[in-house]
Length: 297
Length: 298
Image (cartoon, rainbow over the protein chains, first blue to last red):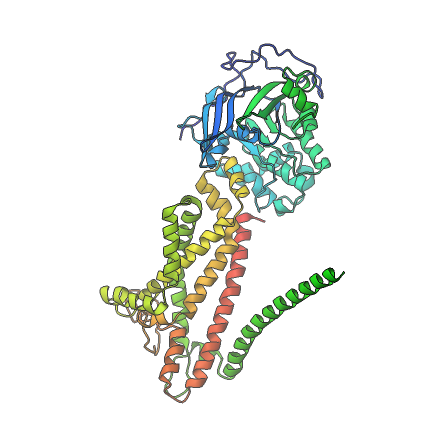
């Protein structure tokens, strides 16, 4: 198994071409948020010339992308534009689909994690994924959160108790479950609580990146706001990439937004990426303008 | 309005028919149990269950009851681990293709071979070729021939029924495929696996034809449970002892029809067999629930 090297302490070199014309813009939601790519900080995630195929069909075409650390990046675009497929490249989940093939470089801390000698398991231990439909295991809340650490070799009651409590607190669900989280099944929680449990479960493995694939699309508005508040809490310590079909959500939670669409060849591609405020108010591309203003999609 | 009335009527008729069928099935089951229990009243008791067979009285079925349980345990010890692993392979690793189609075809074919044929096959292989003579092990292996395909098929279905969401949830946390199978898929599949074990066990309790030529039909007289020598064919603990089971015994006393107590003996033995299956089913389900609670902590 090829272990990934530990996260570098933000080396000053950037091996991705960063958008040169992006200036810091006042964010829509948070004063002082990191919305532009700082040329002094290496991107956390990146793609260079990535193409994804399902069998002979190309599903994603020529994606070049850089995602800054400790910020929230939203992927928006119409259905079928490959947002989720692109997201899943970052933790090798496309490997689970036998016909899927990823070409190009998928970068994590500057390292190509798509390379054949990189173990998907090693990647997924550091890049978590939260699914569209909450999928807690049919186990107690405690066992759900302890699942990842246990599999990665954390032993001992005290150590597990510690990581479970910390993770539930970080996922802002501790107060709701602290009385019975050892006995109560994860399935007995409401949908929104289940999704926060899934986030806690991911946090328990202490990932550097959390990918979220439409995490609120199965939730009611109040539960959605709680997840968004949680994303806001986590943004300073974890890199978050969130796929959403909800443009208001993208504008509320993200520092940067990437807009994808589907070409005439039915392959998805990146139209543009930039600070969220700019994408929503002053995009460079007409396609983006049409989409965010609701003229299509 | 008439259309509505017609569809409502059809709905009610369908419901009534389904209820009738359900009641019919339950009634048959209750009738069978009641018939044998009533016939066995007076005979059933500790002396009958645990006593030795006798020429001069009804006697007991202790040794054959022991053999049935022994055969069950021995066959399950072979079938359940192998069948579950086979099911895991078929559900999680084999994928779809010509080879899996052939395997599946063979599974269905073997599990539907008439059991008397399996018995003759067992006679040739586990009795004659091995020079074991009639043994519990030979019987268990003959039962395995058609129970293993059944167990692996049912285990595969139980494992396939686990939603993919659970698998990807585990994999996305950086678990390996094997960890995912052991810690998520199998615990969730436990109820289905328990059903598989129960169906397999039912065939072990009930089978007679396949055991006639492999485990033997002699009436055991007395078992010395103090003899723990596992290679001694006279020890009831040994896989090499001749093991006439309850089903085979019922067939034997009915077909020979000798003695004054045959009717009583056959009825009571049948009642015990039915109760044994019932007790095993309930026990297995309770054990399955306990096991699931244990491994999932919920």
